[in-house]
Length: 460
Image 1 (cartoon, rainbow, N blue to C red):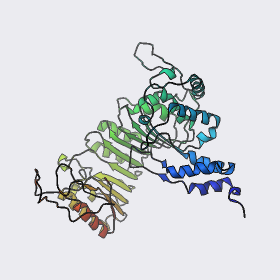
Image 2: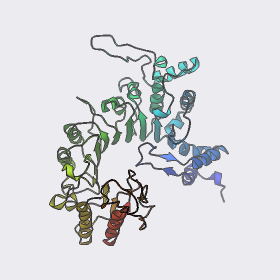
Image 3: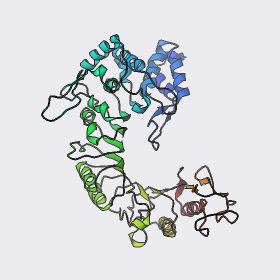
Image 4: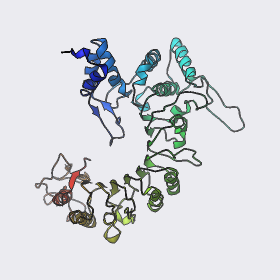
């Protein structure tokens, strides 16, 4: 029988991959999309130091998901350590080629101009030139005047050159997850200045830390010809944007600062959208956006929209989504689904498999519409709808009493003992209404389960 280390490297790598668990923080914008379990990663590193065979098998796994910063841990990589990474990758480029996902936050890196040793300046300058970076790029450009230039290592944002270089060195990266400011993109070389391309980059999640316009991403996007999924948090769209939206099939714009017309134009510029997620920084009317999305009625698989209505009194209603004949996942706000004949729940496509209702169904009308949905599923109106997500209950903290601080979700069931009407404590508002205590969402869940729909309550 062959020894473990005599197995083919590909088989060893497959075996070792079962010991590496990845935490997927899809719903948490401040956490990495892909974060290797620290203990599992330490085990793989230990295994890689035992012999050359295990090193060759473990190294691609160790480098596959690289988080340069860890938001939940104290400390951050020093400038010296980041330059050390560049030295390592320059000497062993195959290690950089193992990186499939790369994440870092500029907020968790050293702030301001970094003092860099002379030998490091010389080395990094050499590598920057190899990748087509300008060593003294123009920073302040005033019409009619010669732009000011400054050597990269003396610039206030000299660390942006180092992080931008790290991104381009990770030539096989599939997913980028960056929390950076506009200076990061200004450092990037243009396609005419560099032969480097992020040919395999398929997904880019970007959180602007400085409020830059989305056009600031252009230098990176032009080096990523295969990009299909773009997620932007705090998206700001300026005038005369020249971004190329054509190749995108998945677009997520959260807390977007853009006009309704601009959002509609972006949607029309995409070709064959399969996923669209949108929320504005202030209330939007949905009509123009929904009309533009009809261009993708046959391809859209996932739609998650929240137009910022504070309540049904705002009169905002998403309306019918029945025309989206391929739609499988839908997320809407409880304040924007309407009621009676205008209710979105009455006009869903038969293809729908999963429904996510954001916001707590406080109003009786909302409760009645969700009850109607349960009956519609039971009668076969929506034969493919198998899953509904409802929002958790969290007690308002603006009053005292036994219900204060209670919440109901998947891990915290409704408690009958909570005094919902505050009979034994003072309450300055309308005491007859009292607190829901999570009763509504618990009862709606039971109704949906009885109708044969899997219903889960989202955590707050």
